[in-house]
Image 1: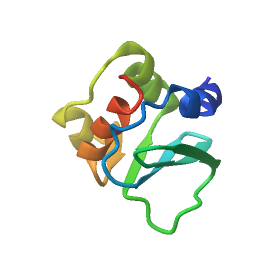
Image 2: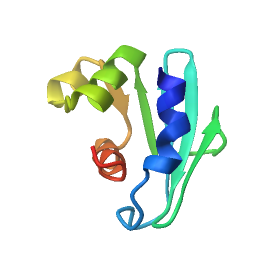
Image 3: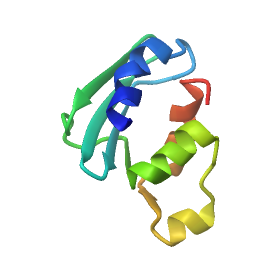
Length: 101
């Protein structure tokens, strides 16, 4: 399920929303993905392909699906309890916007 979501990201990407090139690294259980966004493109790679991603997101596949498919938005409690970990939570919001979420 997670892999199919990431495979479809380029075709679901909305051009013009991402204001500057941004790299994202997702660690979702066994699934590790790097997504690189710019105003015009979305590139998805297997594993970590950048030395230091602008935004790192670590959570369970189930919690990611709750956000992606269920329109749940993590709150402070989710970050404080470690349910989701990120060095840049605001960039995660921007990521969702780039895909109409």
